Structure formats: structure tokens, C-alpha cells
Amino acid sequence: MKMQKAFSAVCAFVMSAVLLPRVLPVPEPSEVSAAEGGPVSYYGQLQTSGNRIVGSSYEEPVQVKGMSFFWSNWQGQYWNSGTVDRMVDEFQCEILRCSLGVDDQGSIYSGGDVGALRSVMDAAIAKDIYVIVDWHSHGAHNNTNAAKSFFSEIARDYGKYDNVIFELYNEPTMVSWSTVKGYAEQVIPEIRKYSDNLILVGTPTWSQDVDAAANDPINDSNVAYVLHFYAGTHGGDLRGKGDAALSKNAAIFVSEWGTVNADGDGSVNVGSTEQWLSWMDSNKLSWCNWAISSKAEGSSIFGGDGSSLTEAGNYLKKILNTHAENAVWRTVPKGGTDPDPQTTQPDPQYTDPEPQTTTSTPQTQNVARLSLPGSGNAVLEAENYASMNGVEVEDCAQGGKNVGYIDAGDWMSYSISVPQAMRYELTVDAASEYGGGQIAFSCGGNTLGTLYIPATGGWQSWQQFKVTLELPAGESDLKLDVQQGGFNIDKITFTASVGDINRDGNVSAADAVMLCRYLNSNEQLNGEQAKQADLDNNQVINAVDLTLLKRMLLRR
Ligand code: IDC
Image: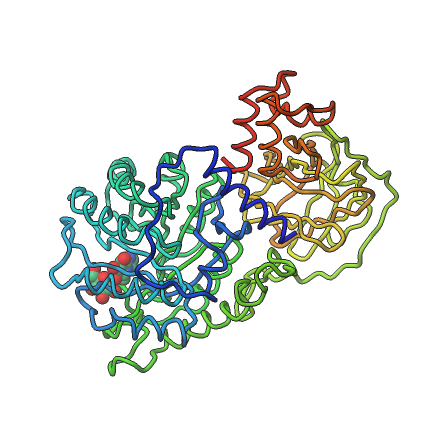
């Protein structure tokens, strides 16, 4: 599985280099020697994929956690490599956010030292962690030119490092999303001249209106929208905005959050923080906590002596340590067998807000094995499981029955047979009142993929969600493990996927090469190969099919 993933990632890269015009200049040799052994060399560049963020060398959702520096103009004493080293070695941060102090008119505050920013970035790259360059302003759109020239310069010098993430606007206040979007659309091209790294865009109302951004997204393939919260002030309503944005397939990044009140002060609100942490874990949202600071306020992790840990500091250290010790990049050898990246459980100290109290025993029923065709569709009714644990069958508003009362830890297993190992696109009819559901699909203990189920508007408001799985040949049991519950399933439609021209069970650059050779009349295709090559299923094999295949490889 891992080999195959790595192989297809390589092929996608080769394809993009060979077959698509690249706008990016060839990177110069780096001046900072990037270290190995941390999250960045493991996951690679962060990239949005639907409402998740994955790595260029790791195709599963990536969630990284760390700390935010405080306004550079006010707590500049921490902006150095010593603090970076401490944050990585002692707190085990996987990411640091550099909040360059920028005033409400969009100019860098005096004392908001870009030289110090660069040395912190260099130190983060040397530690192999991610680093966010945050234009920490509440009025950045008042001076778009300043942001353009700053990000152009930083992208030119740092855009080649997978470590670097650009955050264009900390927190717009009472301005419309169209104003913020207009600003971002002017700054993004400056960065894209040099780098295709992840860009974070703040949202109106102090980076809370991610739903507004999701309704009118920016036309760029690697942008995530920023959600900020303070646990002492914000709760379920703001998480609802996050769910709404995720359900529109927007990627969200929590570049700043606090355990305290929104003014940065007050005591640590453990109960609310734990609800937020488990929500972020279940949605694989990366985050940075506010703040690396010794100012006398509740959110500071350092005390008055500048070095001892406050209540917030001790709490964050514990959360970050627990996360990093179980993180995939630390526990799964690169290129080795990945035990099951998708079933990573929320960190143990978090309490599940709705723990499952019922225990049940697995139940079986006699159903015919479903034969999946080598091309075309087959429909699996969710209630036709061979065995299950914890779910119930009920009447479905779409007709027939559906499976409901699905909680975390429940599972259903279906008997299928597949003519040969190949990819199928699964269209899942699901409904969910509150969203946040997640299913892991596996065969014979191998996790094949996961599917996220957002809110659909009600328990019987059905929508279709897609996931592509590589199913093994022959008879097997397809198991759906429920990682997060709160949804119903009516049926799953399997569509044999196309593009596997050389019939090796995998769509890769080798298939594109074969199609090119066919189009250049250097190679013949037999009937089955031709069917796979006819991606748009119009009985003509031409350059359009090649374009579709390239898109498939590049996941466009
Ligand atoms: C706060 C600091 C506070 C400082 C203030 C200045 O904690 O000491 O006086 O900035 O504006 C945010 C902002 C972040 C705030 C933080 C807490 O991004 O800059 O820091 N906060 O108020 N959004 C919500 C809360």
C-alpha cells in the first residue's frame, strides 16, 4: 500500500514535470540546510485535497499541532533560534506561527523585525517543522501593496521550502468576505510567482466566518481558510460555522486558538478546550495555540521570569507532547508498513463529549455476495451487511431501508467479489443532522480509504459523497469502521474506475505513457485496454482522454 502510494506520488510528480507546463522556476540550492527526521521531510509540502490537507509525500490527511509566537513588535525577545529549539525539543511542536506585527493600516509595526522573522524561519527549517508567516494585522486590506511586496520577497527567498506556509491576513474584523477575497486575490499571485505552497486566508469577524469564504471560494488550488477561536468565549455555534464550511468542501486551518477568553486573558477553560480539541481531531484540523509570550495574561505560556511555564504553558506542553508521541511521522517508518494511519484516535487525555455507553454483540445475516463488475455500476444496500456491530436498520425516506444509529466504534461488513484488483469509485448516500461523521474502509485489515460525512440538513436529507478505493481481487469482506458517528447510510454505488490501461490494478504514469504511445501510433491497445483508455466513455480514444487521465493523476 505504502509502496504504491509512494509510486503514484512519484508518477504524479513526473507527469506534472513532463506533461504539463510548469510555471515555477527550478528551485535554487537551498541556503538553509533542511534537517531530516521531522514532520516536513515525512509529509512533504502541505496541499489541500477537498476539505482535508494532505502531504505531497503522504496522501492521507495530515494534522500538525504547535504554537504561535506573539506579536513580534511586543514580544520580540522570543523571536530567535533558541526559542524555536525549545518549542520543538521540549513542547514537540510540529509547526510554529510567526505573527509579524502589522498595524491596522497594514504597515509593519516598528519593532516588527523582518530580520528576526527570517532567523526564526531558518531555525524552523533546520528543525524540519512547518512554519507559518503570518501577516498579523486587523486591517491588511487597507494597504494591499505592503502585503504584496512583503509576501513577494518572502516567497522568493523561502517559497522553495516545503516547511513554509503563507498566512495573508490574521484577522479581518467587520469587513465583508468580498473585500478580504479581493485583497487575497491580489497578494496570492505575488506568492505564486515563486511557490505553490499552502496559503491561509483569514476570514471576516476575527477569522470566524469560514462559512462565508466556503460559499465564495478563492480560485487557487492550495488555499485553506482560517478559523480562530478562544475556548473561554466560543463554542458550538462557531464549530457549526466550521462544519458548514467543511460540508462545502473548504479546507480549514486553525492558525490561532486560545484556552482562555477572546481578549487573551482569563483562566484556562479545560472543558471547552477539550470539546474544541476533539472537534479539531475528528476533522483533522491543524492548529497553533496563542501564544509564546510572557505578558501577564492567561494565554501566555511563560511566566513573569520569562521561562517558567504558566498553567496554559503546562497544559499546552502536555497536549502537544501526547500528540507528537503518537504522530504518524514519528511512529510509522517511512516506506515501511503503515499499520493504519486513518484510525489514529483522538489524543488520550481528551474526553469524548458523547461517550458511547451501549455495548452490543456483532450480528450476522445471510445475504448474497455482491459481485462488482469490471466496468459500470453495482449498488450495495447498506442494510445488506453480512455482519455488523451496534447499528440499526430503519425506514428510509428515499424508499426501502437505511442503516442508522451509527456511533463511533460501530462497524458493518459486506461480502463482495471483485473480478480483478482495481479502483472503484464509491458513491455513498448518507444523511447527517450534525455532520462530523467519518468512515474507514478496509479489506482484510488493510485500510483502503476514509470518507468524511458533513451535515446534510437532517437525518433523512440524503446527499452523495464519493471515495475511491483500490479493491483487492477475488472474494473479500469490505468493512466500514465508524471513526466518528452521527450519520445514516442508505446505499453505496460502486463504479469501476477507468484509466488502468496496462491493467496492473493501478492508475499511474505508466498508463499515461501507454496512452501517449497509442496516440502516436506506436502501440496497439486490446479491447479491455481500450475500454480503460476511453475515459470519457464516448467510444473515441483521443487527446481528451489523455487530459482526463492527467487530471486523474494530478487529482485535479
Ligand atoms: C492580543 C494579545 C493582547 C494584545 C492584543 C493587541 O493577547 O495582549 O494586547 O492582542 O491587539 C486574537 C488576535 C491576537 C490577540 C488574541 C487575544 O489574533 O492578536 O492577541 N486574539 O485577544 N484574535 C482573537 C483573540
